[in-house]
Image 1 (cartoon, rainbow, N blue to C red):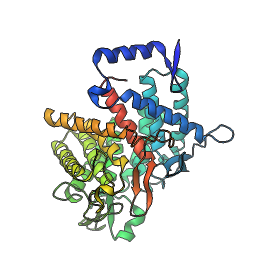
Image 2: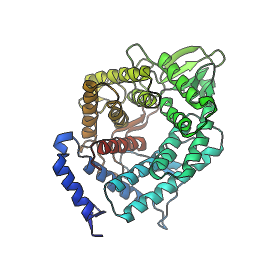
Image 3: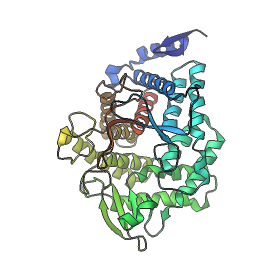
Image 4: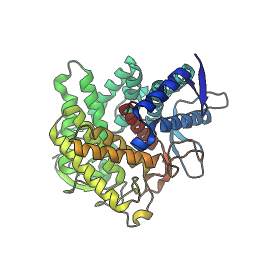
Amino acid sequence: MITIRINGKKYDMKKYLFGILVCVLTGCYQHNIGVDTNQALEYCSTQIDRALDALKDSTSNYDYTMEPRNILQGDTVWNCRKASAEEWCSGFWPGVLWMDYISLQKRGACAEEIAKVKHVAEGYTNALAFLATQPAYDHDLGFLVINSFLKGYEATGNEAYKQTALAAADTLATLFNEKVGTILSWPRHVKDYGGHNTIMDNMINLELLFWADKMRTQPAEHRLYDIAIRHADTTMKNHFRKDGSCYHVALYDTLSGKFIKGITHQGYADYSMWSRGQSWAIYGYTMVYRYTQEKRFLDFAQKVTDIYLKRLKETSDDWVPIWDMDDPRGKAAPKDASAACVVASALLELSQYVDQTKGKEYHRVAVNMLRDLSSDKYQSREKNVAFLLHSTGHHPAGTEIDTSIIYADYYYIEALLRLALEENKV
């Protein structure tokens, strides 16, 4: 095999030249789609290489129990946190590695590079296997497992990953409150809030339940599927304002199940549109439609998308939102690239389900988002080893404001890979 090296990565020369020829013949270059996905995915691979070098200890090994979380302003490498049920971001880094593993395979990287990424992806994923054998700490069990074990299973077909995810799905279901009709998000905050709390982020975790139901040949009366449907319907009924914008938190009476009120936790105010919260709604209801094919969920996915896009145009000078669209500072408020990444990935999928006219518009918007995110304004490049700058984590708490955050990188590479596969570019 003859190999060539580009930006430090080895490629099979025959496959690389064939890929260029295909692009020339099919016209799949940047001016046709707005973002060069091959270039962007190659950039991600380069940044991952740099990050992995920085994560090695003095003996050139990795502490797989320490998962990347953020890179604050002035830092250049990932700040890591101990992999645990309490650290909700622990699954994102393994997921990034699994998607890079798929990307490298599709782009014809050399076997050495592919094997390296697979090896470290396995290490960081296996560090979370304990989640399958302990009670649920909170709803984030979904994030932890979907982003690591489901991505790993998708990439490798590893039966152990499947079994871990199935066990975790059963554990997540233990947080479901039958009278309320939703999964309890934060058991530790029931007393603080005075009731059963469900946050918008929880919509993402329903995928673990839907997936588990699909994987089992004889699920017990489709219990996990029913829980996911009930949660989605209850959330749709109580968690949104008339215009389709969402509260971050919905509070319910634990005993009666009655909806009490909607409030914020990470947004600007109870009445405001917290950008990432709305992005979870867009991604969540798109995913629910994928598994159910129920028209009410498709209609609702469009409703929550359309208000997001309307407000985005009013409050931002590009396709990346400010952290909360009701921040009185307006365009001067901190950005949240992570929200743009979540929405871009969701819209690439949603565009396939709606009518042709709307589908083209959603697709165009998603590409515009990825184009802006891939610019020198948002890519970290030499500033640090992450993919992106300018995300906002918990603004009210004053943490992770205008930083690089691992979940932004996760949804960025997911969206890029979706677009590249769609356009037959990898």
